[in-house]
Image (cartoon, rainbow, N blue to C red; front, side, top):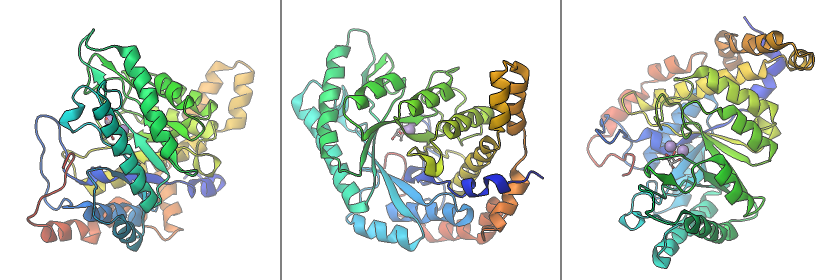
Length: 388
Ligand code: LRH
Ligand code: MN
Ligand code: MN
């Protein structure tokens, strides 16, 4: 069994934020498969998220999505989180489910609609001030479907204008985090399609504006770890939305589709100072569990990130640097692959046990009876879901 002692304290620095929406019903545009026992309101989403932290010790915060997680009292929601051993984290804005935004939100030509989108972000900042959240995460569905539909340059200028107004509102200890995605729901052009555009836009705002990299938001074949390296080098990698994909923005369990890619990304995060206490890069999941159970789906996800982080931390960096400097291609590659192929699972089970956590969080959750209790308790009512 591999000895994790040299990286034990580094592993303890790991914090992965959970998305509240992972616990609600979700699906594709073809069908939402409702699951029994899913939360009926944001409070129940927090309760479910707390189960993930309880069994893994890895997920102390939960991200909110507004208005999906709109409540009368955010103090009550924060208190509920605290009572369950977690805290509220990033606040995500949502300008993609309102008829007014059909042709755009913060990029819209119409002053009224643009102001409405800006005001929504102001409302999100008000929520952040009540919950003590640091990050306002913005993903925009803005874009066009047909060449010639709108003036791309004008939209980019209005984007800058709107983001400047939002940025002015955020507090000293808060950040504006701009997420990019190359397509969908717009299919011809997207107003923030790639890291370069996001970087250009946040750089024009100031220090507290950074980029969010969602691993599912790139064209197939993109070298995502290169982007990670570059954004860390530029001091602008604010956060990750982790998930995995086979085809498009699949939002599947992180590390499920391409574990090696997750490893390569985490190697660059560690290398670039983005991991744990070293840096300010937030780890977040952005996933939907359309057909599998949601709480164990999230437990599996955070464990996948932890396992791959352990492997990334195990890379023999001194030997790697020597091999690289000597131009020893095969040794350098071999050193990286040795870390990737190291089975860290038994050692991580021991690591957990030493911290009073279950050796096998999946089994511990299954044995806890929580899943059966929520199915029994949460009958009736409107089950919250993606978009509800
Ligand atoms: C957009 C996205 C963004 C949204 C979330 C629900 O595809 O990744 O982060 O907030 O999905
Ligand atoms: Mn995302
Ligand atoms: Mn996405």
